[in-house]
Image (cartoon, rainbow, N blue to C red; front, top):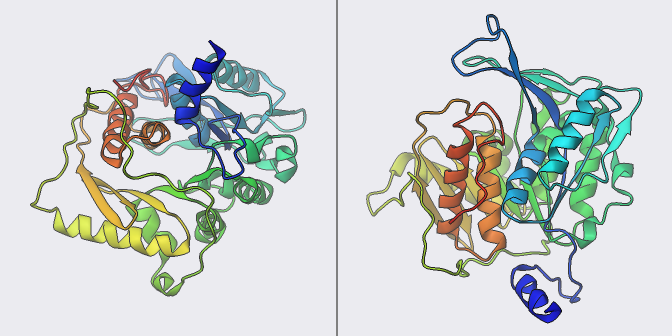
Length: 359
């Protein structure tokens, strides 16, 4: 019985060259906040009650992967307050390992307020997570994880969190995943390219938006050829077993190319690989494209009927990563990502609508 279980697990496990089996499928680092939102069809000004949830780019992706059966851990800091208790309880209930989350008696947990049709408002200056640092990773088995994940938000909420993000990627021996997730109104937003590019330089899989890449690259960035060696490549030919194909509203584009957007997004992807990423996913206005092993693939997407679009990118990331972890093709990963992103937008929560199966 033990031998059978080992064989099944090893089929999906990433094993470094030294043969050492890794303990977690993914370890993520980042801030998670209490999220308040009015019920669908109401406004913050008039709603008699608010929906209480949790939200954070990295933990949202962790929840998605945990629901699909992956072993994930989330590293962060929370206040020693009821908000922190709620976040810990919610993520633990989803199967996310929270043992390395530190509690801060001096700083509070962060807060975000959603207003339909308006900008999200953050109350996170001076939060517990804004004081995360490389020391928060000291006992975390980063080098033993199949993959690590961090977003640009972590690099933008404080100097120490930015250092922690770099430390996470530098210590990883598995796949290094980054979503730039550029945001306004944070500690480092006015110099976000400067703070986020060190993460790009150290990643293997980049999950991003076209506008983000354009901002990060800048007008003269195509001249740069600095590369950091990567330790893990995603296989492009492996496919998920089984005859059932992933469903979704998006369809693969045919020979009639969406010329303007596709060529522009492909160019952006090729330029950003000069900094080191080996696989680049670019979410555009009407397509999502992937550059891997020199080949560019896209699918068309439709953004309709969303109750709340916040969290869709994180859900896409989880679906895409899940399929790639299991050896699925890029085509299958794109469809899974689009399906998961659409599912999450059907509710006011960043994670409640995430599916528990990709079949």
